[in-house]
Length: 62
Image (cartoon, rainbow, N blue to C red; front, side, top):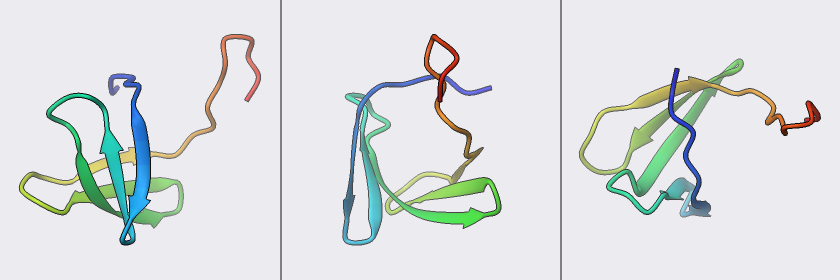
């Protein structure tokens, strides 16, 4: 399972750009198939993949 990170994001020129305050910052092309997503970096590095799920708060609400 992945690590929860807090940061900012923005869409620029049809790319998802993540600003996490780390070396993980960068822009990605996003591809979705069903509930799975793949983030392909627009620079060096390998693709990331994951599953879209609703965000849950501490009280169990979405």
